[in-house]
View: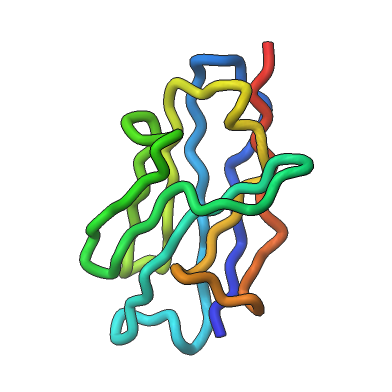
Length: 118
């Protein structure tokens, strides 16, 4: 089972940037067993959605709404996953989570709040 701790959220003005970090741990998250990972977000009143995903080998995929603005990356040696968010928009406001892709119901962390507002 993978445990994750997200960090790096905050309040930012439209057009600004943030970098989210996800520290993953657990017996199945090791260099020998590299899981595809994803960043998800949930805005108030909306369903949780996958915004960015990365395979163990580094192949990435993005939701259309963030393509060209967000970049997902990972450091397998450190068991870290990152989400660089640029050109942020008010509609990016949400709680952001990382998890495996597809997600493991037992691995949701507390998430980190991102608020984009002037």
